[in-house]
Amino acid sequence: MSRASHVAAFAAGVAMAAAVGVVAAPKRPEAARYRTLDTFAQTLTYVAGQYVEPVDERKLLYAAARGMLTSLDAYSSFFSPAEYRRLREDTDGEFPGVGLQLGPGGGDDAMPDARSWPIVDDVLAGSPADRAGIEVDDRILSVDGVATVTADGAAVEDERYWDGKLRGAAGSRVKVEYLRPGAPPTTVELTRAQVKVPSVAHEVLSPGIGYLSIRRFQEATAADTAAALGELARARSATVIIIDLRTDSGGLIDQAIAVADQFLDRGLIVTIRGRTAAVETHTARAGGPATGSKVIVLVNAETASAAEILAGALQDHKRATVIGMRTYGKGAIQTYFDLIDGSGLKLTTHRYITPAGHEVEGRGITPDIEVPEFEAELVVAGGTNGGAVAPGAAGNTGGSRDILDARLAEDYQLRIAYQTAQRWLGSK
Image 1 (spheres, helix red, strand yellow):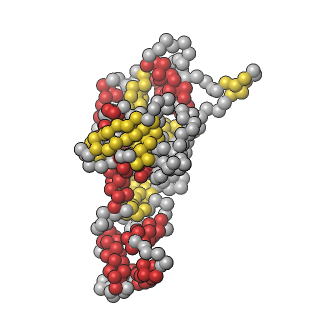
Image 2 (cartoon, rainbow, N blue to C red):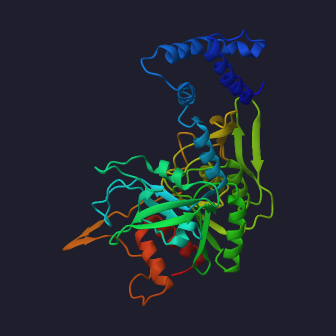
């Protein structure tokens, strides 16, 4: 019997036990390990029948499943049907909604007195929200007439709840009231549509230097990366490629392997070990589109899991210089299991090892060049100097170079990566 089948049998057995108070004797030898379900079923019966207030048995079962998974490690989880559907949508990178990504509310520099209204963290390009004019940093006051905060300013629900309310069947409508700093509240009616969350972004930084950002490894990440590399090559900006994996929490392992394959001509990408003695290895195939490019990989403490597989593979094969801070250190791989009522499990089933044999779990990837997020402030006579200005930042008269300089002045790690790329090209 498979492990997924055991989980299904557990759910079915508990449901039956709740009705009759007993569990039938197991017929298969491997089921003997689950005889302690008698104790669980007895506990459930007492709680359901004797607790001082009526309780929802499904909630009890879900809570028990959550506790069981949480007791294993920091990564394994149980999800209710709604949570699991949302998780799979995020993994697919495509779902029906209005195209808003929300964050927790509160005051900031733009709106110091803001209540706990959910804040717009991102607006997907071309989405219904984008076409309606909603912008990053707008506050969501209500959804379909339901206020997001109480009269005294307390949050009714967290941002994940309201994000879920904004999702729904394509073609359905939802009213959104939002507030922008310095403007009166605005209400728009949006028609939900199928929207795609881009996992890959790219741009030309300067002749010969391209930038590739991977937010999360989703179903289309490898294909989107290949397309981005093609565009950078056509723009003659693939001599050096800066891959930004900062704050990339991981995602689909097969997509990380496929991306690594685009930069490697040969050799091991990752070794995966499970519960048994079996070892799974993945190796690169010749002919990747970026095997001739020099590569810099940007990482930070929030770079994890699949992103660490990519960074570790390129680092171990000397295909990339890794710049930034030591990564999170999540060397465990989770597998999704669908359950019969639409709920699901995310269960740690494997651990991975980099090509050079490094265990990532709890250790992370150590950068070749360690660079903090912010440049240390230099104190000078008569005042302070916030550090070196990005190359060419002074004396420009406007245009894309000014935009790049401003960006490099704000992003110290990217500035160091860019300066490294310039040196490789022999630029001043």
